[in-house]
Length: 313
Ligand code: NDP
Ligand code: OXD
Image (tube, rainbow, N blue to C red; front, side, top):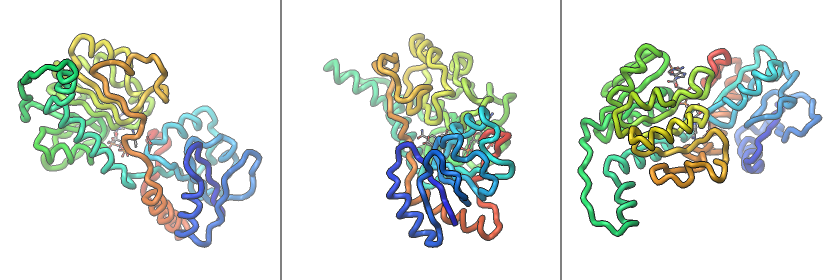
């Protein structure tokens, strides 16, 4: 079994040793330009187009992340990048849900208890009591009710906040209110005090967090973008922060990464920034899934995690 591998920044050794230990029959190699030798599987992040082009014998391409917008963008520009019938898989959870929960719970509790504002007051040497938010009014709305969105919703439900989610298809779970489709988007946004984004980046979702959306949230809303920078219209968020419609934002992802020096988000007093690490790929967990999925493919089965190329996620 031959596996080709490409990642622009990961340490290759970890992946080679880990895959070898799990799949002793595998021969894994880093793909280099010009390598057209046979391969059964590919493990990739933002792969060069020519790595996958013409490889109709591939039994699976495994994205080394949860989002596959980078690969699908390339596929749109080069429709022959993936041969017909070659399945693309993505990481489902593999330890990312817990990381997203940590980030969301920390951030939402900070806003709820107004710790971000106390930090600013401390910097001014001010001993001031701020009025507490009311838990039953502090409604959290999660855009996306997939693997990560649902995990985040459950973790905030456990803290007693009213929680709602918006997705494409209808869903049901105890203690969470669900909305679906464009027709129910306005109902989802009305009364949402904290907006958390965990949508995939697709033609339908890019630019979705714009002024029209922000203006439908409860005045003084909070925005947490954990998904992709392409979802957010930066200028609209800045305008909403300026008007007070949005009180604070926490952003892990940006349209251009690293966030360019001089971007207004860097020094905005009500914007918190992290460098796209809300949930990182954990190699051991990811390799457990990939090795299991490869064994399933070898047995003629279809593992979970297959990306629907037409749907875009
Ligand atoms: P999933 O595919 O499991 O979930 C996606 C959710 O979005 C689904 O509920 C889906 O609806 C919903 N959705 C998609 N399109 C639409 C639409 N047009 N209208 C309404 N709802 C829609 O993805 P994950 O939860 O695993 O991951 C979400 C995203 O998080 C990734 O795509 C990635 O971009 C980002 N991410 C960011 C990381 C970071 O470190 N910042 C790390 C990992 C992921 P339905 O359920 O009906 O299909
Ligand atoms: C991912 C990411 O999608 O790292 O996994 O953002």
